[in-house]
Amino acid sequence: MHYKDVIQDKALLKQVQGFVGQESMHAKGHEDYFKVLRKQGYKIDKFLKWYKRYALFIERMATPKLRIALTAAAEHYTATIAALMVSNPELIEDVEPTMKKLIVWHSAEEIEHRSVAFDVMKTAGVNYPLRILAFLMTSFDMLLWSTMGSLLFLRQDKISLFRSFQYKRQFNRQSSGANKKFRRGLLAYFRRDFHPSDVDYLTEAHAQLKAVGIKNKE
Image 1 (cartoon, one colour):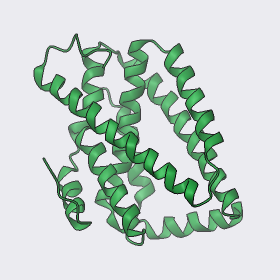
Image 2 (image 1 turned 90 degrees about the vertical axis):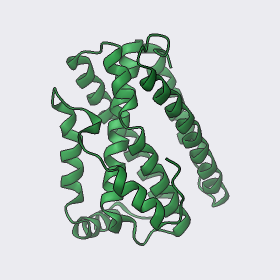
Image 3 (image 1 turned 180 degrees about the vertical axis):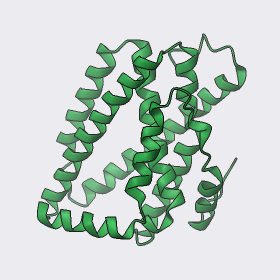
Image 4 (image 1 turned 60 degrees about the vertical axis):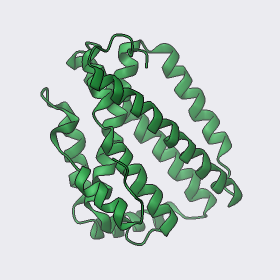
């Protein structure tokens, strides 16, 4: 939104507006899920408070160009995860139905707007070194907060690290090379000529929406 006044491409500006709308729904989905977790007895508020403080610090210290580069990098992560979910539906085959709908809807949303932040970043004149720096920063954030969040839930569910590694080995056996596919998708970001639209998973995403009973409004 910081760059909306300098975007000359009307199609991109419309995409930005749609992106903001989708992210608002996205945020509401997360908040609704937090309410469910609290009702189930999970203690998550301290963790969320830490994360919000961290995110606010990054936002305040980063320049506008770094912020849009961080957004584009985060969108690449979420789009890569989403592509994995819709192209390997066996990964969520046994997931509780309501949660499966949330995952599929969220994945389709991420795939639909996967290029918007990247195109705004290009419009803003972000160079390759800054793009890669932002990706490395985002990678650190993803590893840090996903690890902390996983440990939080493992502790509250009274699941040992040994047991969690057993689950991971089981997942690796059942995932048909999903980890390798995920890494390959992430590392594509290092190509100088990379663009999020290089790989299109919209057909798979819309098929999965239909499979879980969600009507797609294109």
